Length: 117
Image (cartoon, rainbow, N blue to C red; front, side, top):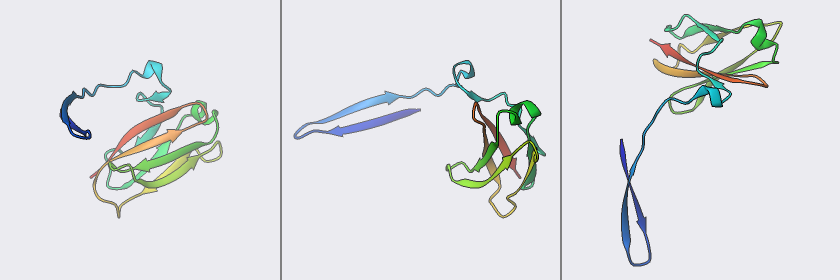
């Protein structure tokens, strides 16, 4: 992907070409996990799905689940706790497509792609 950036000065216009390379994030240096213990079932789905986490994740504290569309708009959110280890989502009124589920604890942030067909 190439992006052109134009900067205008008082009397001179400069043109710069900027090359952008997108590559996977090294999760060994981050607390965002792509290999996640968070389970989304079924995935792909028709807009109704459940999300759960194993006890060791919930032991980190309440898990905030936030579902985002591709524009970054939050579609729905829920919580997992030791008493409620499964959350149910119903986004059948939302457009079909790819959504991103973020699961955040006090120690980690996990992300899962959710496909709605």
